[in-house]
Each structure stands twice: as C-alpha cells, then as structure tokens.
Amino acid sequence: MSESVRAFFDDLTHSGGRMLRQVSGSVRFDLAHARGVDHWLVTIDQGRITVSQGGAVEADTVIGADETLFLRMAHGEIKPLSAWLRNDFTADGEFRFVIMLERLFAPPKGAHHPRVAAMLPSADDREPA
Image (cartoon, rainbow, N blue to C red):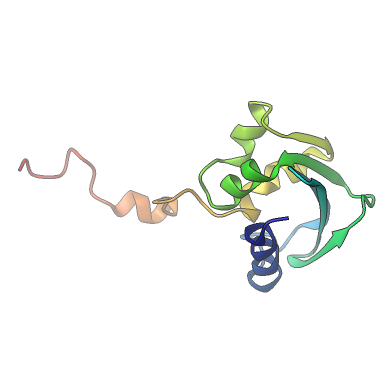
C-alpha cells in the first residue's frame, strides 16, 4: 500500500466527501498493486465518513481498481464515471455508489462550480492580444 492511498483515506475521514449529507451506505475499495490487494471500507452515514482497512468485508458496492488508477481518480486527473464506462475499474453492487464516486474524489484541476464558471469571461469576450 502506498502512503498516497493512506493519506487519501485519512483526509477523507477528516474533511468528508463533497455533497454527501443525504448518503448512507458502504463502499469497499479493492486496490491491486505489485504486492497484492488492499481492502479499504468506506462507510457513509448521512455524510459522516469512517474508513477501515482490512479484509474483504461485505459492502453495498465493491470497487476493484489498480492502485495507480485509483490515485489518478483521487487527485482529479480522471473522472470516476468515465473510467468506469471505459471498464478501467470494476464495480459490483449498488450503482448509486459508482455515481457517488464523483463526490468522494477531488474535482479535476481547474474545475469551477457552475455558478463561478458562468461568471468567468469566455474566449469570445476577451480582447485580442
């Protein structure tokens, strides 16, 4: 297990996921790496997040991914739903938690809330250099 994965899950318990107040359930991440597979259980109770590491316990949804891909999603380099549609990772269980991954992981770099993005000048509004 990499320290980056541990840091992601530690941060998740402290900062919580984005927009998860109405979510309850569990997601197990089975992260494959050169030394084997690590199992991380994320439990969400009305937005409160707890994380445990250990065996392959039951969960509402099980996500199977390569550790490198997981970290790219965690850092906002890859959108989880797009990665799932490309079969970059597997998901078994309740589909709503696959959709919820977008809220757990960081937004893509340079992303803005839609209201903020609407106020930013477009390329058409800028004067030529």
